[in-house]
Image (cartoon, rainbow, N blue to C red; front, side, top):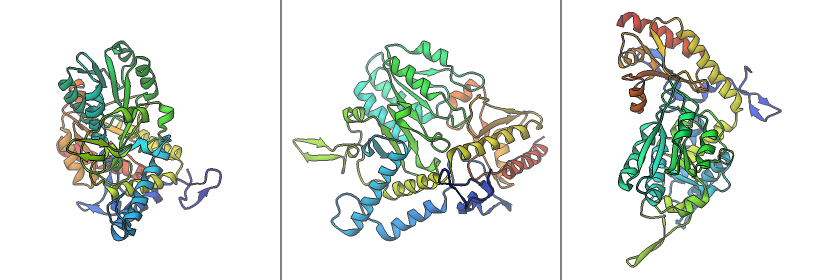
Length: 420
C-alpha cells in the first residue's frame, strides 16, 4: 500500500490510497469524546462526511439556494443545473442507460416503500408471494408486509445458514409461479454478509419475478453496475456512502418505471391538473412530488466524486485487512463469539461476549471514545433466528486504521474486566 495519498497513480489516474492521510479529509474525526480520541466504528449506521461534501453543501446554501426547474432567474438556473448535474453524475456512476432512471428519494427506506406501494399495489394479487431473506433490514420487510396485506399476497422469508449466508438451495425450491417479487440486500447491515446477488437476480428472473436490491450497505464498498447486475431496481442511501442524510435514490428499469403509477401527489410530478382529472409528468419527475432535497443531491454527487478519486479495489483491500485484523485480535478474548461468518463478508464485525449484554459493552466503550452500534440493528427476525437479543457491531470504513482496531480491543479488555 502506498504511503502518499497526494501522489497520483499514473496508470489509473487515481490518487494513491492511504487511510492515515484520507482520515484528514474528514474533520469530525479530529476530536475527543469523553476525554479520548474518537474511534468511530459505526460506519454501517452512517459514514462520516469529507470536507468536499461539506463544502458543496455550504456553497449551495451560500450562493445558489433556490427552488429548481421553474424559476426564471439566475439562482434557479444555477440550482437546477447543479441538481440535474448531480443526477446525471450518479446515474453515470451506476452505469445507468439514462439519468431519468434515477429517482431521488430520502434514502433506501423510501425507495423500497415507493416500489412496494407503486409496483406492488399495481401488480400483486391474491395468492402472490414476495420473497425476502431472513437477513433483511426491517425497511426491506415491513413495506412488503403492508402492501401484501392490502393485496391478499404474502411475504415469505428465505432461510439463512448458521454462517449468516442465504440458503440458495432453499431459495430455488421457494421459487414458483406464485413468486412475483424478490427483494434482498446487497450486503447485510448486521453481519456484513455479501449476498450472491447476481445469482439471485438470475434465478428470480428465470422464475418470472422482478428483483429489488437493497444497496444501502453495498455502494460504500463496491462499484455498482446496474446493467451488469440486471436487477429491476437498486435502492441506496446517501448517508451511508459519505453523503448527506435525507437523500438517496432508486434506480429502476425504464420500462418498469414508466408502467408504474405515481406514489405521492403534489407539485413537480404533474403534467396538467384540473378538477376533471390530472395527467402526470414523465420520468423521473412523476415520482418526485414536492420540493426535493436539492442540497442533498448536490452533496451526494460530491461524495461520489470524492470516492471516484480512489481505486475501489485498494479501498476494499484496506477494509478487508481491517476486518481480518479484527478477527485475529478477537481470538484472544475469552467468551467472545463472532456472529455471522460468511465466506464473503464486508467490513462488519458483529459479536457477543458470554455473560455480558451488548448495550453495556457499547456504553462502556463510548466512555473510552469508541463508537460502536449495539442492539438488534433493525433485523429482529435474524436475531430471533440466532436466539440473540442483539450484538455489538464494529463496522469499518476507508478512514479507519489498525490503530482503531487496537483501540477497540484495548477498550474492550477494560470493559470486560469491569463487567466480569
